[in-house]
Length: 399
Image (tube, rainbow, N blue to C red):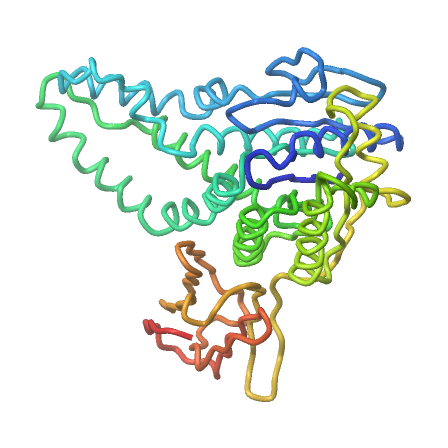
């Protein structure tokens, strides 16, 4: 099983690249599903075929699906929404629209990803290609399992006990019902499924993230930030797809200046993302949609490569034994030391890079060890841990 997640700034052509990859994988003999989790679906436009909210076979060994995020939300969140609707009626606030209030930002896309987990566990497909939302939404989406896992571990048990204690008292309040066990269990079930999903998408042998970029200043800047944060969360990026590059024949006349600009940005992308492979796709002479043009795009991007293989095997995160103790190394490229903050609370480490935070539960080998120092060298954050102690301390500071 291989899962390939494509993301990038809006408008760079990630949907076309995802669809092209899916056609290529199917042509290589793999049973392939291409899935859109973007709320603004355009996969059917790229394939030039009508799609449904369930997988539809569109070619030999190829299926496609535009996931209905509202249906997935209702399926996973139904009991919670039903309870909240009753609460809103009791509070005489049912005119506000309880269903809309219970869908927190990013939850619809998150429930779409849970459908991806089901496909991965089902064994029907050899490869799943995911057309994700633009970069910022994708990063927020992929970080949800980290955040909810912490909430369920630390806060949920207390909330559940408080609800049980308060239920006899609240029964005296006419019309008000506290969440029952079914509601509380559904909350825990969603988080358990997210943890299972995280296991799959964090496995570099199974899942690769691929960034789609254009040779443009703002696109490259966003891709750099995305790459930093993907590494921070521990996701494996194995390639950059450089799309819509002007061909060398455009070096004269009207397009000459643009070709020079593209050459400059091509060099910058190669320097920035090395040693990741940079797969170039030229600006096609026709609109890219439909099987013929998508296969042409795939041929240009992957040439003689097996597009389903792991194209780069570098580690975003690893633990090393040193003479002084242990060192946790996390790749955070394109980051200045002033952007990084570390906070240790017992066996948890909070890493903040800019506006993004990641909570790391330290593995067994680092438990009861205190952070002694941290340094940033050549895009890699090295956090050194000292000898074991029985103390649970809290530290906060800059690198």
